[in-house]
Image 1 (cartoon, helix red, strand yellow):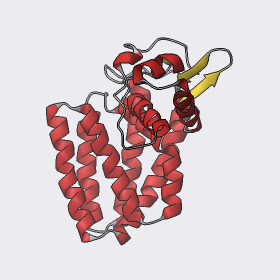
Image 2: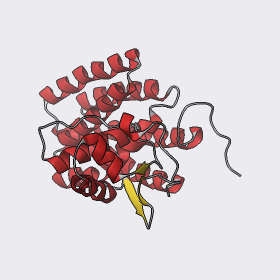
Image 3: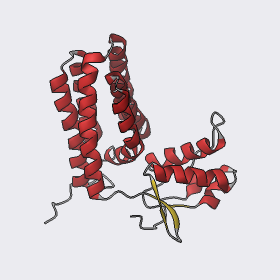
Image 4: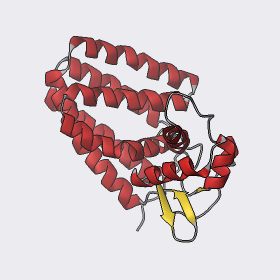
Length: 241
């Protein structure tokens, strides 16, 4: 549940200008989505339609439409007489989300091992250099996008529309939590090494080992986010008794 605490920094500093490539409501939604999943607007922050409309130079109608879509996606919640807030996931919700992610993505990589093309394998190997460059530059937003695109490419290579649809329902919330895990000291380095091993297992079409590694990859991210706290960084928290 949101605490109603203010965002770290005002929303006027957190939203990017709207592009012109989408309908207005979709553009407002995308601007808010990008700011939430990248943590420019923090979990628990209030989402005030009038303030957002002023910054984006639109009416409150498309803003409210975007809020409803964010609520449907699980990224915002509406509290009676208080308005919308960025969702704050509980530990139990995080556990449940990562459990289903581990199961779905393990299945996707096993299917991908049997169905992926050589061109797609080449793309995965080339894309790995994008993540390495982002990590070397300390550009964690670029690293987050690299991570998202890598996992999405593996999902596409599985060639299962039902699996992709189920995973798509979790995508925005997953990105929101990934933005936390990549702040954890040492996590991105471990993750990119695991990505390299995954790509080589996919290239070898070793579905069993790739599926096991993907499950370990997602599960270790869960362990990190729970051990280091929901905001990441610092030293591991002591286990609760």
